[in-house]
Length: 220
Image (cartoon, rainbow, N blue to C red; front, side):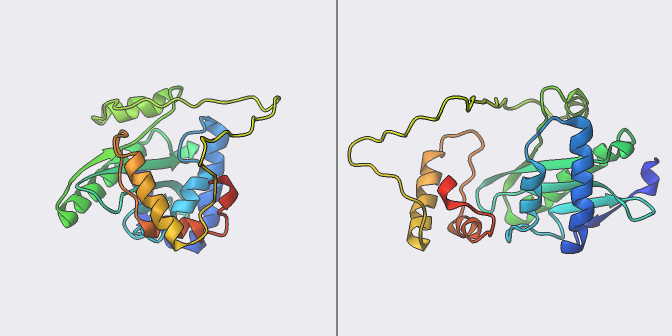
């Protein structure tokens, strides 16, 4: 498939969801790298109010209007230095035709727009599983350099997870109202202020997650 037969366009909303889900599933079946973000997390981003659906999400489709690739940018709402996280998935039948390079160029162009509009420094981050040698080679060929490694750990559930033990005077509670959301946001921002690539979150973004029908308060 030639790159010339593919055209890019913005995300159109709910009418695109089925085609996007099919693309994500086909990509996961072939590669099985289980890279972040997961398909479910990508679909959640499409529903986030702070996302500019016309500019932060882009689809590439063929002459038959079949979606062959999707890319998105997770852009912090506030901050003096903004790091946009670029994620993307490409249909296995469309790989290796320079489409991935076009996607990276789209992400860089969008982040430059953010820099001009907010008058801040910007950069693009994009990740790949250590076994995804093609993704890593692609990023390196486009000037990306390794900045951070992350490890995924697992625990067997054969043995039960022990009950949590808290210091005297501490208890565990879930976020129940806006006051809790504000306190949780402040705590989160202060806790991770020294963490790599920390970007403050807003109370509005926390409340949006609380109001998501799929949100389960007992897991937070």
